[in-house]
Length: 288
Image 1 (tube, one colour):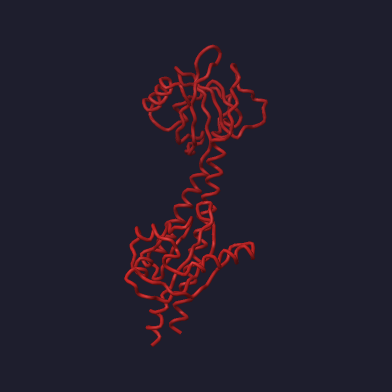
Image 2: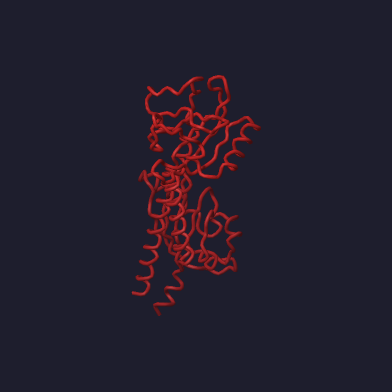
């Protein structure tokens, strides 16, 4: 009964880890799409005299700012809706009013932009008309506007990206909290190397984490296990959940009987074998 209870506990630990890893992987993929989309969006060169307000609403908030006064000369509909301002308002909108930071800091950024003559990309907090702040990726560049140099500002809301990053960090933190304290060995094997092993893996094998990162899986266990798992995955056409009993030789030459529980899953957008190894020798000792 003790053996069965410990084994069930280890199975539950692995299943929880797999769910958290898959959640983290989904977050990474979503984050990659957001970042990729943000940098792949082609920017149309603005009209030399105005932003066409009759165009379909853009996904990016765009405005043109006077270099000397920092007054917003024109803004597209997306910009007005994003920050809650109306182009027809009596009081002119100023860059200092919407970008977080003191005037000297903002002026320094624009000064460096003038010196370098290239696009400056930074993350800034932008103030909504109602007073709350919105995290945004802001791109600054220089254009010719009505015969004079002006600042072309493109802002993209990164609130969703920040939320995904927070979810990802939370998932990774939970994974490490469980894995680092687990009594069973937990590992991630990818591209023919261990990219993660927990402290229990070091205790079980006798090898340090640095040594394990240079080793192949079949340096520890029967290489037929991995081939068997690959064949099953191809036959089933989907990731498998594998339970296998085998022997392993530790660094000091001791033979240990292990129960391996593993599955193929996506990790960093590539397939990886994620699993746990439970030392049956210790279980047998507990049941005597």
